[in-house]
Length: 80
Image (cartoon, rainbow, N blue to C red; front, side, top):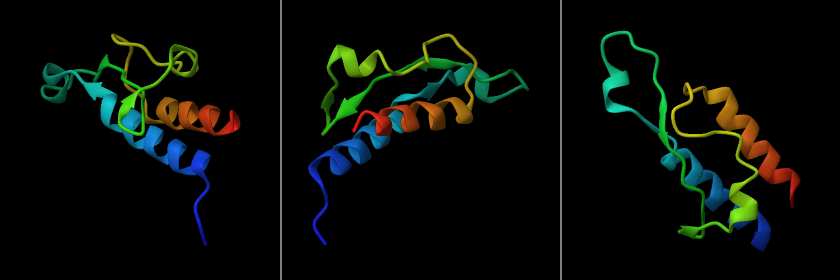
């Protein structure tokens, strides 16, 4: 069964988002709460347009929360 183009792009976007929500290296040890050091949104390996990136409610410096990444991906899927 062929994959839809939008589905493939969203899967690529999810992979890019998951890889780009990077934890601060100093937060990984010593019991310090991890924080987001950067967020990059990629579609098919390229930076996403600013309107798509604006849908991501995660910013550098915020505490890292896997549930927020999950919510961001669900928001992107709603865009079709």
